[in-house]
Image 1 (cartoon, rainbow, N blue to C red):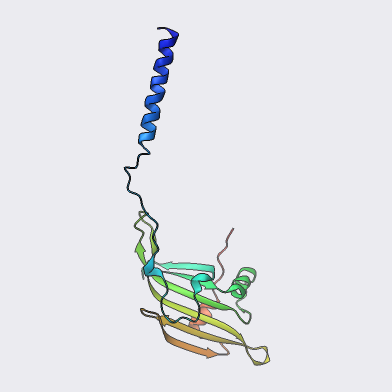
Image 2: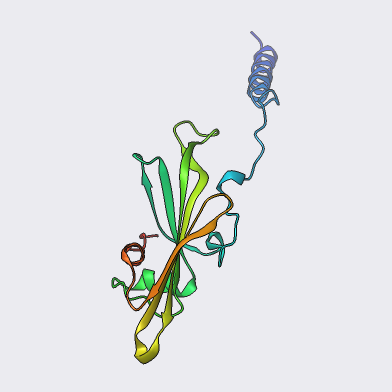
Length: 171
């Protein structure tokens, strides 16, 4: 076999391999477009949109098929990430958003937020004599409406629970 014939065979084999490789990239696959998860958005008369705040921590419950994310305003997030105590300074605001879970249609076995179950707010305000004042508000329903609230010098049980959550460790 001559050198020219061997080179032609090598070039032919290269062309066949290249064609096979490129055919795997053909547009036969259905394209998945990005969509916004409308069911997980917050609608209603809320005092603020916690989805625009920073993440503090998250939890999920398989038993209740729910997931929740604790958000905070800048003051609360800075405090949560730099202190182990739970004595948030005045002007701190925490918000826990709880969703039902649903299967992720794009990732087998994945779970994503579904309908909003509730949004809870804890406001820490400066009271007289340096004693903090706490305001707890819960919103439920579609659209979200205030379902309960409590103000006072000590947080109620639910507000105390939210204030006790440790910030997730992030790299």
